[in-house]
Amino acid sequence: MKTSLIALAAALLFAAPAVAADKSGDGWPAFRDLYKELVETNTQHSDGSCTLATERMAARLKAAGYSDADLHLYAPADAPKDGLLVATLQGTDTKANGILLIAHIDVVEAKRSDWQRDPYSLIEEDGYFYGRGTTDDKAQAAIFVDTLIRYKQEGYKPKKSIKVALTCGEETEGVFNGARYLSTERKDWIDADFAINEGASGELDAQGKRVAMNIEAAQKVYQDFTLTATNKGGHSSRPRPDNAIYAMADALKKVQAYSFPVMLNDANRAYFTRTAKLRGGEIGAAMTAIVANPNDAAAAATLSQDASLNATLRTTCVATLINGGHAPNALPGTVTTNVNCRIFPGVPVETVQAALVAAINDPAIKVETDGHRSPATPTPKMPPEILGPIEKVSAEIYGPVPVIPVMTLGATDSIHTSAAGIPSYGFRGMFVDPDGGNAHGLNERIQVQSVVDGRRLFYKLIKIYAGGK
Image (cartoon, rainbow, N blue to C red):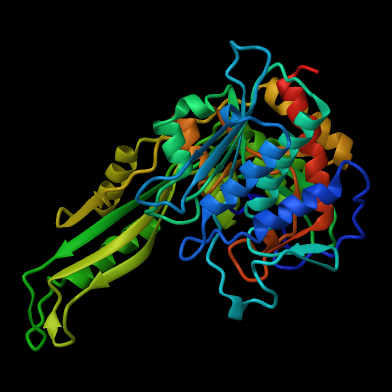
């Protein structure tokens, strides 16, 4: 899960605890048991097993009536604990690709001694569920599996097939990534007209009031560049002006000063348009102005003072790691810096690389990719048949809360499904506290009522998308 785009003054405060959740009806005890099993299955990379979690979810689906033909379990031979599961409720329209619901079940590492509660026990306390993965992303994964079970049990026959993919590897770089594997090697298992993934949540203010229900309409492309300065070095008792550290310092100051151009697409245009009324004042006026004229320098300057809004406007690059020199009494021979860029959708990596080279304007500084590239993330359209059902069901569950398309500043596994030609939208359908529920941090939590409401929302929403009866 990545941070949302609305910067509220109360974002550093905790929301008020939820009132007692309404858990009546709809098989809540069975869902809670499923959710508990998923949270209490350790899926952190160091000593956990996604494979065990997928096997447990597959067993529940088979008990509900799904056949072996409806389930695909896979784990690579060199990463046997990084398994995935694809489950399908077959639709009656064999010509339609169907709908893909994707959720990662791996989690960020959690150390028991750091937590107030056992991170791998689902603990319900003061209106919250506590535990690693309760927010990111096992609530959504559990809801997707539970929804398939409920549909099978009630005999629902969708027109379009409904596919649920539970994958591993989203939270850890350099490991087997299930979403990437499915997108590149087994697209036939997941091919769909569109996909729903994590990426954007509903936002609560510090008093627990619902502010907006966000839907990720686009996400930036992650790319690291390595800047390298080299020098013949020498003894520190005979310093010279041509010093690799000084050269790198000069280069980084130019990177710091450089601002990429303002860009608008359907995602941030809709975000600014709908959020302007919520924000009001100078910020709201600047949002309206930038949509009307992307070249409005005054509006851009106002919005750029906020780090999140600035990142919503343009590609950003920032120095994150630096390494140089080899001894305290020697002139440095080599200095390297990692510059992390979050590239506006549709902008080639080469364009950003060329912009950095031009901004630094020093042929002695090499600017190279780190050898790893995120796949391109084409911005999907947000047609009425996608946004309309979300607005309808959100209003039924949450009342008159604005639904706002956003561009995610970070990255999710949607980069893989989008690159495979499956338009992918980030929509968690649940509200989280201003601190994001401590996802990736200590004592991760989500309000019980949020899970109750999210489960009801997806049950209705998926039926609208899938059709049938």
